[in-house]
Image 1 (cartoon, helix red, strand yellow):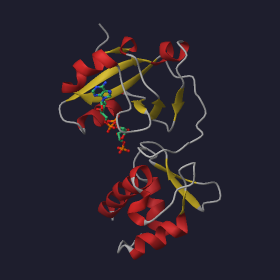
Image 2 (cartoon, rainbow, N blue to C red; image 1 turned 90 degrees about the horizontal axis):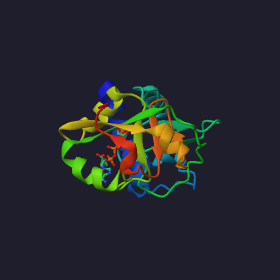
Image 3 (tube, protein in one colour; image 1 turned 90 degrees about the vertical axis):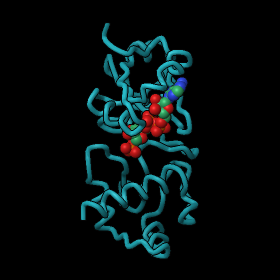
Length: 182
Ligand code: HQG
């Protein structure tokens, strides 16, 4: 069962963040998909996903990758989008520091340009160095960068807390990024 939860989570991440068209789905401007339609389309695509499995996917792990609407009829990804959606997140004053996990080889370019969203809508920051390490390890030899989040906020950048562990912002100039506490 755990495998199916992870598999379904990965598939839903792909559909709801990057390619709803893969299931012939349309998201509303807020990034929401109709749950019944999603389940129908997934079934037509040969994937046996039901409401119980969806609920397990949402409860899985600490990252709160997805959310149901209040009435439970819609589902969306909480972060990670490459497609254009407006999540209507509330700007949130951040803690003094947040963290960004990346690959060692990206450092020269990050020193030059700061953190850029690349193919996603936002730069993703982590609440803890441990989580940032996990994020960085997806890219190979990982490096955890310290982001002076409060100073960034004070300089007029808007930050959003998407979930307990994931923060979003448009970009982070290199002057707010440090490799270590030195
Ligand atoms: C890097 C996953 C060169 C950036 C994760 C990162 C996260 C630069 C890569 C969430 C750069 C983009 C997002 C610059 C940024 N020069 N490289 N100027 N600026 N980069 O995957 O943050 O587990 O799009 O450091 O865990 O790794 O799927 O972003 O290495 O929470 O739920 O460009 O997605 O969440 O990579 O990951 P990504 P990310 P899930």
